[in-house]
Length: 71
Image (tube, rainbow, N blue to C red; front, side):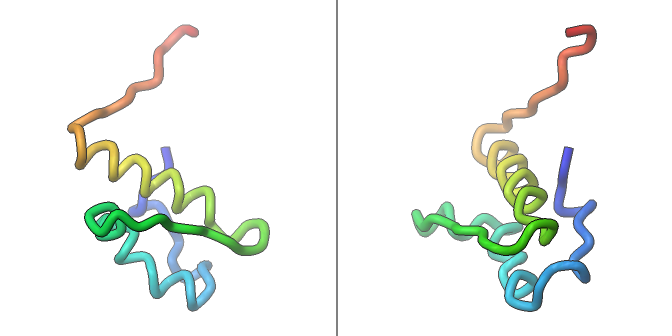
């Protein structure tokens, strides 16, 4: 699973690094705002989206998913 702790922040573009805290603390959810991640291939968009989704799911509902073994 991709998490914020596994993210190489130095590899992100400068404008992307500036918004990491907003994603990590989920203020956009409390403000009922959308987020849009754009950029070239390999810039970390998918990693950020997954990490943000995992954090939001864990914070909002206490939900945690585990991969089913043997499927």
